Amino acid sequence: MHYYTSYILFVDFLQIQNIFDNLPALSAPKAKELRDELTRYLSTDPEQVDNVLLWWHERKSMYPHLSRMALDYLTIPGE
Image 1 (cartoon, rainbow, N blue to C red):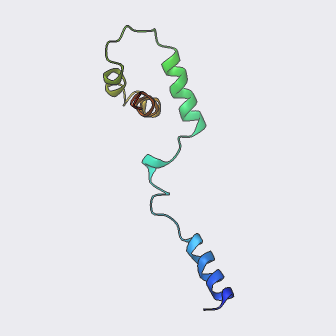
Image 2: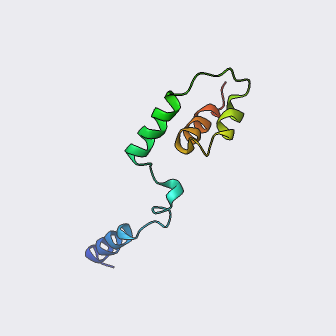
């Protein structure tokens, strides 16, 4: 194969879309959706909670993006 042919094949390969690019679950939330969700969360009164992971899990339908971020952050293993 010549250099030019290899380059064209490589460029064609880069233009192929990843099948995961258009999955709704992996797409970033729209700024307005996230802002509305954050505003709603911040407008609630603080609660005394024993299990914060369970709290976020129980409210994942109310705060879908924030709960996902909270669970990602709160489940990072410590030293």
